[in-house]
Length: 156
Image: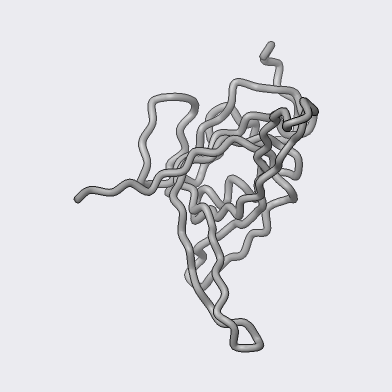
């Protein structure tokens, strides 16, 4: 029987990505992503519930995150759920659930925080026809992202 492990999230970074470079130069980035929903409780009061997701990016996506993502920015993430188990210092069995992203679209512009059309960055295992694509093996900056710190003159 076939199965699917696919996650789609739109949320805001809870903090700047933490990036490590492993042996062999492989980059891995981690950051918390907040997604929120609003609803009315039984008394009619508006309530907001926020879920926190642990996001993991590898290789090229991690390098893009290191350069361009900051706390508070809005991103679209596609990936899969991965749960690991480990033993803590007291010998108790613990579980950790992460979202391993293979596609990321920046929805918020870097410094000013204004909304932009979005830049689509992908790991090598993903394909898409929307946005500016980024191949994890590429070494140049993705289309639509300025390589210097000067503001662009685009009207959007």
